[in-house]
Length: 295
Image (spheres, rainbow, N blue to C red):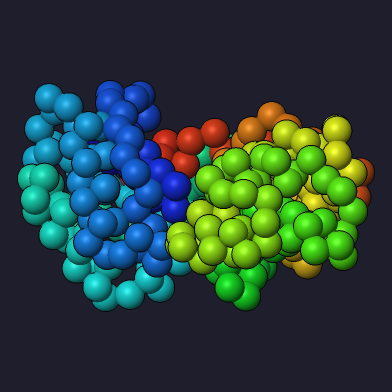
């Protein structure tokens, strides 16, 4: 048997498969990105998701395990130690291998080992992969200095648009009602600032679906979504997929897997600009289990 997990900033999914890739069990827990939530919390959520996926199956029967995580192997020794601790805690005889979330997403959506991926969820990045491993990546630099076109980026742009409307610098937007409700505050600049800074920065990513939901009814929201799509397309363009001879692109991350305007704009742009057919990484945990089987 093989275990795979996709540890995101918002949630963690795990899956147990047999030697043929048939799913034997699944698990779900809260976000397990250590940069966002801390090492200890990440370990707790991974353990919970793995236990659910294992169910009544013996942990000692797991031949290999892979965890997909933003940053992957570069996340540092403390994370590696925590993963080993989790493995021991739940009874695994093997230490899970930590790979990039981009690698497990690509494996989930691609039938071949070489190609291009673009992701937009809490964060955002594009990558070229060879033999299932990242050869080159664009962005994925984190919310503070990168992740352009991500859920966080969209959420931050929404708050900025609301603040600009309220202080007279920006156009009216229906985002004001949705954002203030989501932040449990009032349509007042000081109140919004207080609500934003009271929470971890990554929480702004939860506002992204509100923005995409207003795409057809609000010009400000539409501009934000359109710019996000352009940023993601620019990341793929930097990889020169046409010159590399690729024909498909894997789309991953919650925002690109959701049926909405961002997905449509990005998939359409891939076809129009690069001649790429979009495939979708529906479950990164399945991709992680696939890599546990073949790497």
